[in-house]
Each structure stands twice: as C-alpha cells, then as structure tokens.
Length: 269
Image (cartoon, rainbow, N blue to C red; front, top):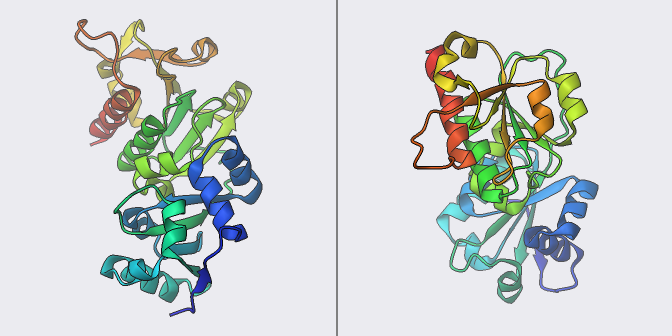
C-alpha cells in the first residue's frame, strides 16, 4: 500500500481546498473551474470511481481505514492506479470536514474530464435547461446513464453538474457520462444536428405518438422546475407532451425525464 500522508492542521492547503469544495457556493464553483477538480463523499461513490485515473486523492481517517469497505477501496485503487494520493485526517479534523454523521469516513477528489463534443452524434442527448435543484440534476443524470445515454448538456443557469450534492444524487453516473456545462442556445443550435424534442404541457404531439421517430438519435430538453423550457427552444425544437391526468398540473422534471428516455428505450426493443 502507498504510504499515506497525515493531515492534522486546519491550515493545511489540501484540507482547506476539500472543505471549500464540499461546502459549495460561489467559491466552490470558482475552485472547480480553476482546478478542474470535484469532491465526493461516501463509500458508494468511491467504489464507482475505482480503477479510474481521474480519482486522484482519497481522504479518510485511521478508524476509517480499519473499516473493511474503505480498506478494500483504498487497496484496490492503489493497486490499479498506484499514483493515487492517500491522506489520513485527524479524527477532530474530519468532524470539521464532513457533515455526514456516522457514515463511513471517506472523501475522494475527482479530476473533471475535459471533453470534445462530437461532430457527428450517433446517440441521444439530454439537455437540462435551467434545472436548478441539485437532486433533480443528479437524478436526471442517473436516469440518463440507466437509459444508455452518454451526452449531457447543462445550459447556463442549471445547477453545477460536479457539485457534491449532484454527485451524491447521481450515485456514480458521472463516470459513465460526457457532461458539458454552461452552454448557450447558440451552441445548441450549432452543435446539435439531430432532432430536438422539448417537453411542454400544451404541445399538440404526445410522447406515445412519436413511436418510430424515437428509434433515431435525438435530443430531449427538460426545463426549469418552475418556469419550464426557455421560449427560444420552441423556435428550433419540437414540442412534446406527456399524457397525464389533469388533476395534476405537471410532473417532476426527473420523473418526466425517466418517462421520455425509457419510452425511447422501449421503442428500440
């Protein structure tokens, strides 16, 4: 096992950086953009990145390292990617870092991959237009990965895709996705050459009438929890509604995403 590095000071630069990234907010967003790094808590997320060179740091405690599930993560990651850095935090310091209570003490640092958007798309695309709730964004990403999608576009105004809350909600889906953030409408117009469907309540065409059209690569747009999709999208996308009982005004954006993506998967079967 690679020799761990001990951290016991509140002034340690790595401790301060990880704490800021975990706390979120404007400073954390700036750090992520400058450093190209994200942090995630918990054994499950650590396991989801095992064997990846993008997992660059593991932080735990002496007590954590004695837990079988954490020891297994550390041993396997260092065996597969020996250059991964391992840090052991003082117990008192750990309590100031994490607010997950009695959860197994492990935090990982992930290098955010830099992606090139393809010139020719051979698969479907999920577009998040101002979806602001981190839980919804993470759930949508998890659904997309489960439906076999790779490409996720987050428009300006959407929640930060690599924030700890989104990572936690996505449950490891990030590793299987190609995520592009802060896109503009012009970028969508220029780069998305496949049909684009936008979900809206008053669209004339219903989801279940699309049928064979869903066999071909296409993009889905889902909008803000309150305001819906930007009006500009209607100029170059096709509106589609999900049939529902009128006693409910609208569906949760995560639920709508699951219905549409898995309808396409069903049609292709």
